[in-house]
Length: 261
Figure (cartoon, rainbow, N blue to C red):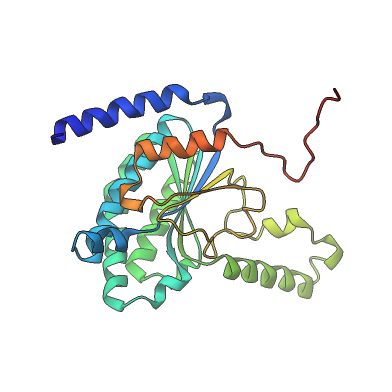
């Protein structure tokens, strides 16, 4: 099969998968752990940065189909707190890719009316990256149709600690009493405040752990694990994840009602 035939086959497969989707029961919020860039590059004898670049192309595919299906919230795990332990040279390359991506996509966010929402300890980012991230977030904050939340220097435990410290400070200052603290009040101090909890979490590369990603928010999220490496996770793979999600019965801790025979 030549390249043209391969592309044509994927288009046919995508059309067939889309025909099977129930557009009335799509998730409203998808969270993604984009894993496997390094392994993808290693399998091809390429430097790790090649995997990260191909991963950005995969991200664009996934975002495109999410927007086409009118899925309003997407959250991606772009750079974790633990990623700071990687070699300095790789971190510099990743930060450079982030700057390139935001510079390139900045106008497209406006064209598609996408709110760009960075979450995490953003103050830890290099100053030029922090400035760009803040600018794009500020100039898109009024969009309400679509939100792309990007976790940068993010750690779920760190987010919870930060929220607890803010609540403790309010109690200390006398503006809040301990018995006023409930889930709703706590969530107001999370970086994801205002977003619905994810309905579906996708993790690529065959790993079946959450890696400190949104531990509070995914209490009732449906989890989808695939062996596909992130750079190979494209439009058809996204549709397969959505079809799998639509097979699930979401009970949120409730018992399914059965009709007596």
